[in-house]
Amino acid sequence: MRKPRVIRCAACAGRIKPQHPHIGVEDLETGVEFSYHARASCQKRCVEETVTRLEAGKVFAAHHYHASTCADEAPGFGCAGGCFDTPMAVAN
Ligand SMILES: [Zn+2]
Ligand SMILES: [Zn+2]
Image (tube, rainbow, N blue to C red):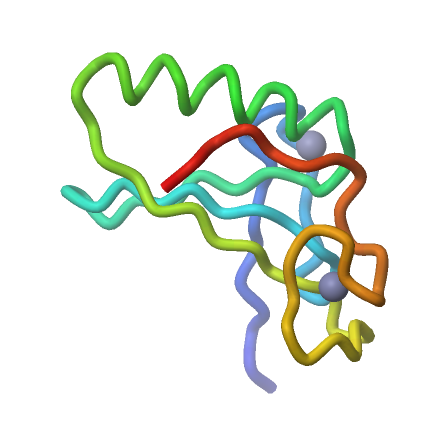
């Protein structure tokens, strides 16, 4: 049996199930990825923390991981699966 990767939310420290929608913010220098729940409160923390890290001169790429049940062919905010609560204000 393959052991599933455990992802924890950097905002609330809760576990994120890989089949649930979540956001990854990847530090392009180190390859370290910070994960956040798709819910609005965790996304808010995500934006705040990413802004702080950007101000520290770091470069990030944001990834949107959709639910395994999401059938939208062009996933993003407002996808057919309704994965994300609110648009995230981080532009890349
Ligand atoms: Zn969370
Ligand atoms: Zn989706």
